[in-house]
Image (tube, rainbow, N blue to C red; front, side, top):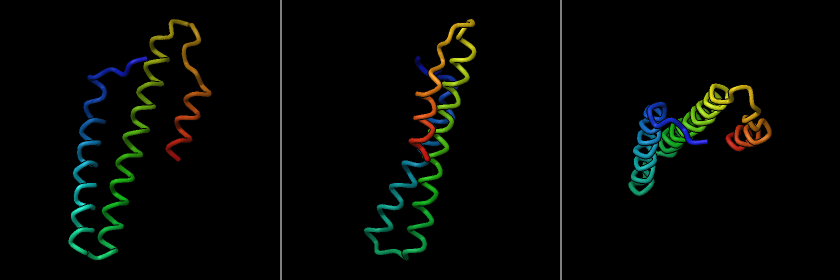
Length: 87
């Protein structure tokens, strides 16, 4: 199953923001910034990545349900494994 590129626009934007945040964490470390500030920024990166992952899985589930035409195309065990990999 391929994800609909039109639905992935928001996810792509979220990942680009997370990429920028991660770059900021690296700069903060190199500059010797305050530990609390670094951890706060790193936490924001982690949340952004988690949300992007959940959005990708949710979109995949929705597409499977819509495109199934009554056939079992949704691999529940595989989706459970994906969800758990984000936990």
